[in-house]
Amino acid sequence: MSLPAATMPDPPYDASVATATKPRTDSQNSSSPADEREKVARNAKSDRLNPKEHGAYAILGIPLVAALIISGLTPETVLVAIAAVAAFLAHEPLLIISGSRGKRARESTPFVTRTLIVRLSIAVVCGTTAFCLSGNATRFGLIACVVFASLEFVISTGGHNRTLAAQLLGIGGLALPSAVVLLAGGIEITTAVQFWLIWFAGRVATTVSVRSTITRHKISATAWAKRTCDILLFISFLACFAGIGIGSSLWIVTIPMLLAATVMRITTPHPKHMKQIGWSLLMVNILSGVVAIGAWNYF
Image (cartoon, rainbow, N blue to C red; front, side, top):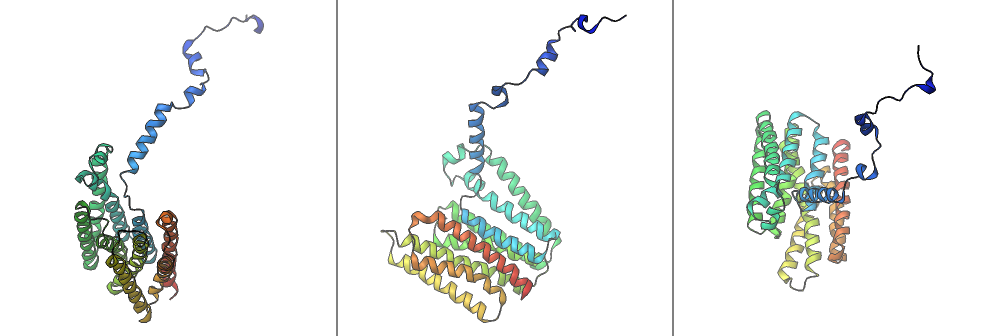
């Protein structure tokens, strides 16, 4: 016979159940300030392992994406692209380990060795696989990429990474993987080389116009430095107009970059507006990438 509900005895107290069902307080739900500071510091340290030259991301990425869209996604093209990005991301950890960024940078990035090993391993594995799967033209292009990367590393470790020569070498090396992607996708050599020259000439024009802007606001700048920028800008214009003149539709890709270079050279904005200039050049590069895809598909 069962007791009425009102007279049923209470169940025995179970501390484990009470603890499990006890609602969490706000202090338990939210992390402590110390945890938040540690998380922010960890994210900041990981950011230090990425390349600091923000313009380099666009120089590498936009032509690379355009080349992938033009040539199509195949095992060879994807492997080349992954190898290029991984090698690019390995550049900063390599400089830190070599001591080029200083002792403080080395001490503040405890995971730099592991990061370098991971990124270099991806670059080597993907690059080697692409080398084995591809034809001779692609293999030659991959070797050229390694040569450019090696020269850039030597210049950077020597403390000359901010010189004009180093910047021009960097532009050539960062634009080269897009041409190799085209080769891996079966595009003929002359077209791939032309694609590389287009991005190289256009980026040289914008780069020297930025350097010219900075130089003209420096009291210590020499007249030769100013003339050098103007000469290189003139040569870039000649190369681009020559490409357009021979009837190759791909060279219209350089028009947005040439217009941006012209505006900067004429207006010579103050270096304090460099952040806005950088974002503007990013938009110009994206526009050139869209033009490259359109020119390939419709001309």
